[in-house]
Amino acid sequence: MDKLQQGIDRMQDQDFEEAAKLFTEAIEENPEEPLGYINFGNLLLHMQQYERAERFFERAISLDEEAATAYYGLGNVYYDQEKFTQAQNQFLQAVEKGLDEADVYFLLGMTFVQQDYQKLALPYLSRASELDQSDVDIQFQYGLCLAQNQQLDQAKRVLHQVLELTPEHGDAYYNLGVISIFEEQPQEALDRFEKALEIQEDHMLAAHAKAEVEKALNE
Figure 1 (cartoon, rainbow, N blue to C red):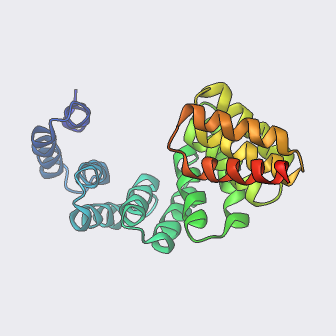
Figure 2 (cartoon, rainbow, N blue to C red):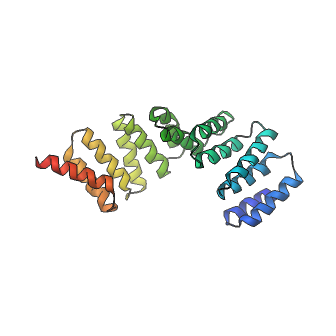
Figure 3 (tube, one colour):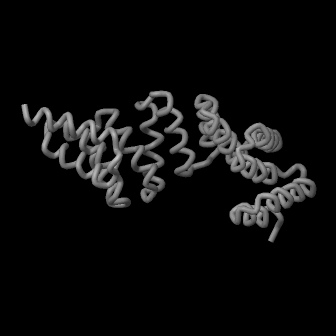
């Protein structure tokens, strides 16, 4: 097993010191190989050492401008620091360089969501949803984005998929309740808000919405 793979294994075992040692040795033995820098960058990113991680990913890109995972890593560095425009640029580069994985499309979509550009987020979240239909976070954010874009029928379908994956997903019930209000089905909305509160009794949005619906029904 080569040192990069050993380092990845140690990193997965939370043995970061040994992982750093192995990645350093791999870089010293092959200083022109970008993978060593990418893996060390991922380790530093995991440890929230963002400035150092950025330097390692940039070094990898300087060695290979087609290293898609280096752009993805750099995007994560910026995303974690809430530099969403910079993150977006790097994720787009990763996709252009051939990275076709759910995570990069998901985070690319989320950079737009974080900047309130829900319409621009939608195609990327849709692609992430296609690529990983079992990821609850991806499916939920896609369903939410569909709802925010007024695509309510599709949003309901996706949120029901979320509930198939995780039956106790309070936020999915809450958002289905909001859709029911838009569709002028107050009793259905009430049932869904109550279900959200049954799952998560401190769900403030569901509690507020439930009170408003009950008030309207009693008038």
